[in-house]
Amino acid sequence: MLEDVAKGLGSVVRFVIAAILWSIVLFQLGRGFLLVVTFGRFPRGNDLERYQNGISLTGVLVVGLTWSAIAVYNNLGSTTG
Image (tube, rainbow, N blue to C red):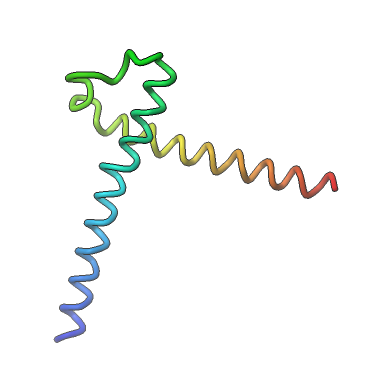
């Protein structure tokens, strides 16, 4: 009984942490990237609420592309030496 409560509580905590990560960190990362790419024109004002999921997805893509670029650089650097 106590183990079931602990598992349920653990699941809730993991969900909250994932939601915070998605809605705050990735959103701000995607917003910053889009502001740099569009020279500060997008996203501003009502677009922040309207395109919230798209902005967060941009944050995920930025993290994924950065991670991939680092992996490629590390693998190419190890084969030439």
